[in-house]
Length: 342
Image (cartoon, rainbow, N blue to C red):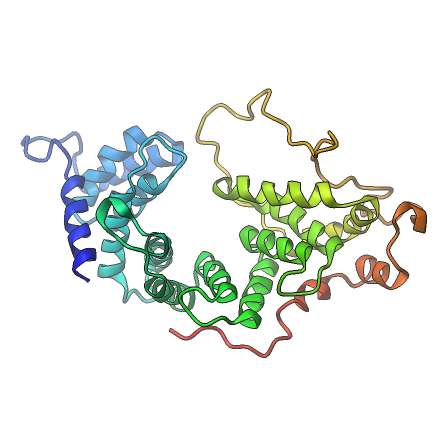
């Protein structure tokens, strides 16, 4: 534990604002600093948010600590500092691990802090001498997953269960969590499960459902996860023939309503969509785009494909165009498993 406490002490020392001893501050109160910091954070003006949040965090203001950690942990920003982020997430976990998940409004943020800590502990942080510790990462994820019901923690825990990293391999339980999260609209779980379905890893391959599920994941994807989710979509889309795409069309129409969960998106750049952004293409030059809707709005009004056109066997089409929702549920929810214990 000494390495964690040392990192925390060093990180918090760095967080002290430069104007702390000047006798005056640009903020009339901690609440005013927090208000200004949160407003700047929501607008994407991190350079303005940081001084205000640092001022409030120095007075142990919980939300300032959390959003300051978010800024420092953001790899896409200009203010990335994982040492500071780790110190703040560790402080939140240490001081608020007993937050009541039913009554304390800080509880969800404690869960997310534990999940962030798990990511650092799993891979290590050389700049502060933090070595990889998968077992400790699992400890954090189990707390975040079961106590605070953090979906990202459940997703990361499911991947570790499949790989047997930091814990015993438990493929049925890993698939169970991926299935539940996918049904709940978690884009990362949907993309990861789609990749497994496409490759037939840990389960029988089901390429139409894989394409349908990754299509939903792309629509659900938050900005920070969009790149790797689109990578999976490109791989599956380009590898899917006309028959598979045709079957997936009908599934997407149904699953989009059942398992879609559009993220709250805020464009922090102020630029809007960039003109001339690179377009993804397959090796044959085909542009990667959404699955075309063939015929009616649900894809059911088009004439059926012939076998020469790549049609799937009738029993497969019945599953794809009929009761498709159980296909996703059957991946995991029929398994007699229990959630991981704290």
